[in-house]
Amino acid sequence: MKHRLLALAIAAWGASLAMPAHADDAALKAEVEALRAEVAELKAQVQQMHAVQVAPAAAAVAQAAPPAPAATPPAAPNPGRSMADAATGNATSLWGYGQLDYNRPTARAADARADLTRAVLGFNHEFNETTRVYGELEWEHAIASADDAGESEVEQLFVEHALSPNYGVRVGLMLVPIGLLNEHHEPTQFYGVERNFVEQAIIPSTWREGGVAGYGTTDSGFQWDLGVVTSPDLGKWDPTSLDGRESPLGSIHQELQLSKAHDLSIWARLNWLGVPGLNIGGAVFAGKIGQDTSKQFEGDANFPADNSRLLVGEAHVRWQSGPWDFTALYTRGSISDTQDLNLSFLGQPTPVPKSFWGGYAQGAWRALEWNQSSLVPFLRYEAFNTGAAYASLPQGFEIPALPTQRVWTAGVNYYLTPNVVFKFDYQDFRYDDPALNYGNRFDLGLGFQF
Image (cartoon, rainbow, N blue to C red; front, side, top):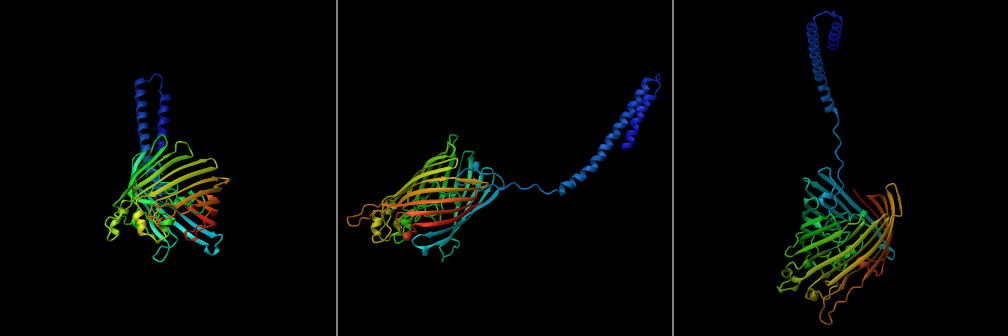
């Protein structure tokens, strides 16, 4: 076909040259136009034949080619941030973290202990651009059974809906947005082998409640949270156990396990993040915690613990600039109307405190950094008291305040990568209390997240 097309074109050109000068111009023009039309028709046929041959080949290549690689799964979203801040990618993503510790008291070597402290798996599923479900499952101390110290639990499980890029709402089991550690408690996120004592004894990380909460940010750098959630249950207080002395709120929070919901609480938080690296803010949690306790005490339908209220507040500042990281936090809590309750606990080791408090200051320095690795020494000072004061009782039955515990912690975090950290520290306690695991000790740890 191509050869025929070329021959016709040459013939047309030759005919135009061979025509005598005196030939009729009209006849010449007609012959040339006929040849041009035939050439155009032949070109169209060639193009059509070429398309028919190429299309099946292209389709075969497309079918044989491997599919494009899937998008990289998003990083685990931060539960304290809005969906607008979360990474985008696959509709469902998984992540997790783990922590292994070794503790060796200097005065009681026989009490040295190694533990798989916790293992956590989390998931995030985005139903669409504005709605997702977020959850975390945790196992503590390696084995969970009726005969072991371990626990298995749902740490978080909530549905979040973004009403706009800057604010939204969550419903479900959520971490209380108080302090710096409760929401950001992965082992790569804090210095030292163990979480600091203030945010364990006073703020019982990880403290969680069920309910509904709103969150948001502003263009001026403010971050806010407001929620209505379940309250702790004062009826859970066990005066024969040291749990309440170790952490008053840790012994009575309900974790949405068949939680009594006669009384509810509110939380509110406000942070200012308007300067890069600076976080200044605070939070409050308040509500009744009696949970209709009177029904638990036969013969005393008007038991006054029904009117007990909890109030916990904290203020914090964190400044991160270059290799430096400085943090300070103070928190204080109170439980009202505990006089008659403590009278019923006379002779028991753990009455209910009227007030409890704690604070710490911490500094860290990224001294060395190479490739993805870094070496970060740190120093932290803490002071806390889980029984700073007790409600007044009749003369002769007064309950003395507990001494304030003070702890110095010095150590180093070695980050093999940003998501794998080896830790070493030494802790010096003012008061040795083996029952609460307080005493000078060396600690080693490994933590990771993915």
